[in-house]
Image (cartoon, rainbow, N blue to C red; front, side):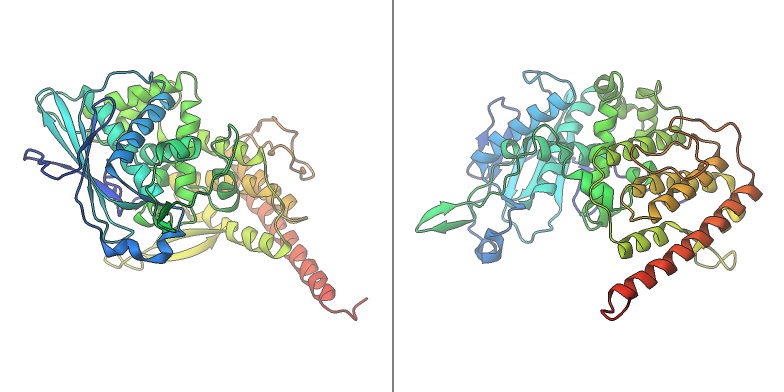
Length: 463
């Protein structure tokens, strides 16, 4: 599907952007603190802004109040955690100097600016941070500048700074928060009690499962495709989609690192970024043994999210919620133009219309996404809608000619091959349309029976 390709590089919409600087960095402010390794220099402007006196801020545990000394320690810890996630030793050498400059926050959604500049045979970086910031933006900024520092070590003199994939920056940022949040986020107290500084901390022990918070999100919200992960919107990066993008980014990079030699391949991806203006070229060069084209990534990603969600599917949805979710899956959003110069209009069409009218490339992507989404909801839908979702999934998988095994724990539809059985042939269009029509009739009958049952339960005088 065609859409404008916004350069994500390290430009992350509302959150922060990467720019090439052409002047020397200037640090004349007071309160400068150097980190233990010397890679970070933190400076701040003294200004007790009245913005912090808002009493509602003290109760917001998602906010971090940054101070020079605390940030110098936290940044070093964040670096070590990120390096270890990528398979680098904690005592590995660094190349580029990172200047963290704090300024008084003016709002809670300020842009965090990362400026990179070549200096002799290396790159240096300046990160302009508000001193009151959300944990997501804080982690995104540190993840982005540290990944840039790793990637630009291989940049040729006179070359360009690396373009980072958004999902890698945000995915690792979320992983650091989930796995080591109490170590890499050090916040100054936001309020005082009897003249003593007080900070409120909510801490959850998750054991070794750093993906615990992502699981319920991905079980309840539509999962992004690889294409959507590659070009997220500002709203998604701000978390206004219920956290679906951030959860998908975390799981996506986690599963990539779990591939054979995944950490080595990820480091190869970073090292190859300065050679290309498009990060996808470096991605397929680094992960060439696993993926040859975007469709290969989409297929692999679909299997990972279904397997991940099925490990702990959670409670079943109510009948009303199941009906709403299944209805949502039955439609396909499309764009069309009434004339060659007309603006595109949006509409929802049925699965049958998508089969009959979409071009092959669009059809393949849409149907594979639907197969994945039906598999994701099967374990959560109330009876008999889980069985119906399984039927739709099997019908579409048959048309695509892909394996149609059910997620573990799903009740099989009558006539469905046992788990692990591969398709022997692709189902024809006519056969698939007939199966979908039959499933639609069963769905309408189930909806009617459920409505009658709910109506009877709400009437105390009913038999």
